[in-house]
Length: 216
Image (cartoon, rainbow, N blue to C red; front, side, top):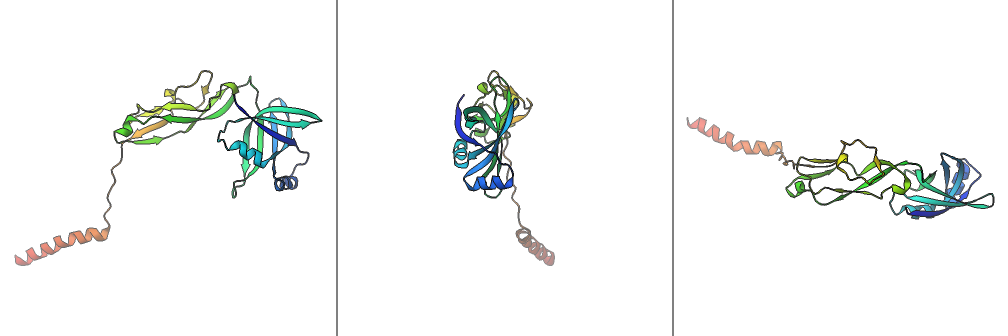
């Protein structure tokens, strides 16, 4: 199991004022907590955390290092929640949750789709219905992703969670009947004729009909 390293500091002040000053100095407030540990208020360098998150792995494990009462401490954690500014997208606060290697946790694991469905080759449309699934497992058994072979999906067929190859020791929490991909038949485009064009097309018929009536 790969982990990222992150240096943090313990902070003593809470509230909007200290948090604002912290952000102005290039850090954000954070909190560390777990089932069997006392919560700690932390300060994290914004640039360092942003760099760590650029890998795009939502389930990244982080080894926090900090000094507490003159002693160097380390904690294995994962990010439980992040708050961002809705306007700028900048990080504002982060929650770190302690990971225990002998305790199962719930994770969202991405699905990686492999191959081109035979239904698509025959003219169908591919629909991605789920791009990740929720699983429970020990941290050491957490897969980076689950590969889904979609080559045999025909038009009108769907691949369900029950069809996925799940690694041993990993329990899927989503319902087995939920579809992750489907291939549907292409719908024919309906040509809508504007009323003006429709009326213009009927005009010669009217004129022809009037001439015929006069001749009679």
